Amino acid sequence: MSSSRRLFFALSLPDALQQQVIRWRAEAFKPEDGRPVAAANLHLTLAFLGEVSAQKEQALKTQAGRIAQTGFSLNLDDLGHWPRPGVVWLGSKRPPRALLQLAELLRSQAARSGCYQSPLPFHPHITLLRAATQPVAIPPGTPGWPFNANHFSLYQSSFEQGRTRYHELAQWPLGP
Ligand code: 2AM
Image (cartoon, helix red, strand yellow):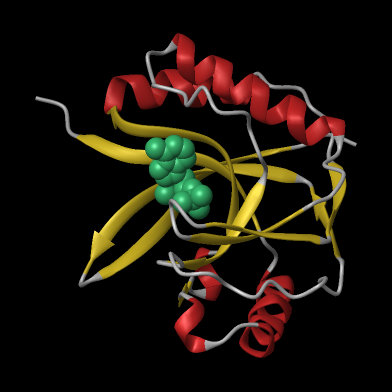
């Protein structure tokens, strides 16, 4: 019997940017606003896959490897709060077309492989705080970090010793 894993495709944040974001976050929000996501867990999800069998995982990796997509730069200059899932997020006021195309491709490949895809429009974001279900004073802006994406990755999400951990399983380059 094959085991299944909880998987998603995402862009990871460079370590230096993770540190800049968490330093700024500590100043920008109050402890009661929500539970901060650990620096190493900051990422931008491209396609959430859910529980995936080993066989399906292999097929999704093969399809991901066929993607020929250029790299891109995005400016992390937008902030918002979704009270229902309790998420405070960092995003981009003008997400580049290449980012939207990459996510669309991964999401349609996932759907064709039988991974349920939300009908809600894709809104690229990096979750900063969770359990943010009460009103949050969102700061007027961010320092506007530029972020160059030159690869995308497949991650496994697991819950170990009371913590969510993301393990990178594979990565693929984004072209020049
Ligand atoms: P979130 O940060 O907005 O919660 C790993 O769990 C990643 O997959 C997170 O970035 C999370 O988005 C996203 N995710 C989790 N469950 C999801 C779902 N049912 N649909 C879409 N994305 C999901």
